[in-house]
Image 1 (tube, rainbow, N blue to C red):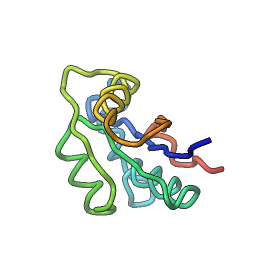
Image 2 (tube, helix red, strand yellow):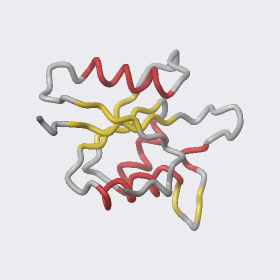
Image 3 (cartoon, rainbow, N blue to C red):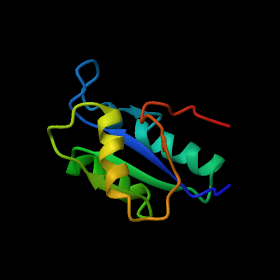
Image 4 (cartoon, one colour):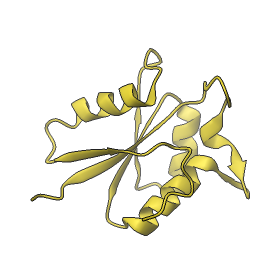
Length: 111
């Protein structure tokens, strides 16, 4: 079985329950950065794509991890699942067998 996969982390600033959630700081670092850090620790060779609605999120991600791909998604997309699906369609021409959806508010994700 092939192991060509990509991890897509959907993120948006306009959350109704916690606005700016991906950039909410915990111990001095944005929540989404903790999530990326832990993913890279667990899956160091993984391809990670951030699917976000904001240049602000993109800027923060690239400050910490310039190697991480960031895709801006249309403002009309409201859910994380829709954001992941948008990226998956864009990846159709790439050699990817699996798309793994990891939420940006899972900073403690481990094995």
